[in-house]
Image (cartoon, rainbow, N blue to C red):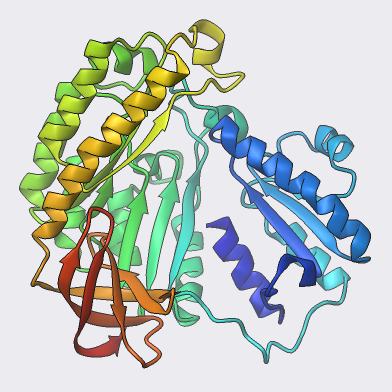
Length: 411
């Protein structure tokens, strides 16, 4: 979301994306440190920019996002970085650009993606035992409805056809605002914005998803039938140790409720394998949840302790790395089989696809349910709504051909 917002602001000042990093006058790294591996990659990338700074005088380097929680320490570690900005802070970067007189006429505008992310709530109040987010991003802070609407209106006016409303726990939106507007109310307002064709949201927390929100997804025409609902585990003891606030039966009941109201819904989930103390039987309970629930997509990760979290302080990381790896691959194997069966049912159907770009010479985009679709066509279809007849399927994507003339994606 921050990257999209910042990109829009820089484009408005006349800047364009460089073709390669060594051609850039301004390099911005937007960091995510939810997992230790992500933080390690950011650190390595920042270190690698020292050589660019030396070889190309005048290059400005910005480190943004969740890693920026202690500016003094970061300044000591990365003296070649010119600016550090906390999550969501775009104004300092835009002010820097203005001060450097890099602003242009705007006549050379970069290609605007048809999709964008809009953060609606920062931080998290849940303190799941494995998660660093509340410590890095703080407690929950909702953005005012009017501010979000203005941002989405600007995006729609610039050609964006689909927005995804973001929050670490998006279902908590509005509880800290006057009048307590909730996510269902916000969706009702946002979907009325002219020019917008689709609205999505993530990430949902199973203990906070309401029947009101489910009914809103079912009834609002522009809100897509796609829900990300992280389970993390299918075992009650592990869920309790994770401090998730629900049982596996609670989760199953919520999935049934969602599918009862939204029959065409695609549900994705997140799973952590190898959490401290996880036995083979407890892992099998997770596999049973996956087999029974039949998710469209599963994001799986092996547990790794994050310093400062409850789990890192109080639980021993006692599941061997080889066991974690084997369990991760088992989840992937089960999910590949499920996704193959689900996607095979799309063969022969014509699906509406919002065209997001080209990859390896082919157009690609997503259906309302979030299925990735590839197809061939000679015309420029970026941002168009294309009806694609599916002729090949796999666990991860669909292939097809244009079934009808594409149309502009509009409300």
